[in-house]
Length: 163
Image (tube, rainbow, N blue to C red; front, side):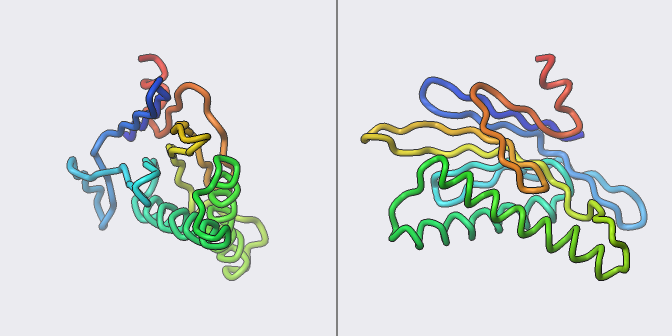
């Protein structure tokens, strides 16, 4: 069970996650020491629920998309809306590659959920010299949902909501 929580605070965002992972190699194997929070560009923290390979693919795609958007902007930090757009483009491209294109390649016109992580992402935006904390849920099909207070994800999200 994965529990991921993101909470907006007065001075930033707190992201937390459990460290249990499970994978199958003929039989289910659990590990209790997997870091599920990724730091990119010293500005973003991303926690993911789902298959670890998918989470890492999503984080890499987001990192690349944010770097490319910043490069196109001449090296200037991105605004919150520009970050959302870059993240949406990045995840939508991975979703298309893994779900739509792969389904078509396999002869199935219906997109399958081969790639299905859900992420909680936080970042800092500079506004008039002051840092503004941002919190998002990133859905596997590329939709980025801006969050004003807190977010939970993973199979244990209902438990986290109770707390």
